[in-house]
Image (cartoon, rainbow, N blue to C red; front, side, top):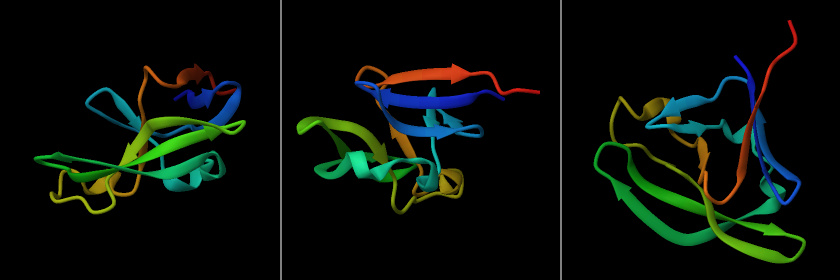
Length: 103
């Protein structure tokens, strides 16, 4: 499996080689996300099978880019439990690349 990297304006936000793919979005474990470039947003949304999502803004070189990522702090179904606390990024707000791993 390739390494999935997320960056914004050349700043690495997340990197992991075993993301969980749900509905076309790569969910990263919290330990693989560089939260030093993120701040909590006031935005919330609700998914009927995952629960209430919380959002992150990115802060890059003093500029805030709103709601670049989301996560579900407390999922509401067994099906969503594997991504509880994991972070996904909006494809239209960040750069997502797939880097082959070395054998």
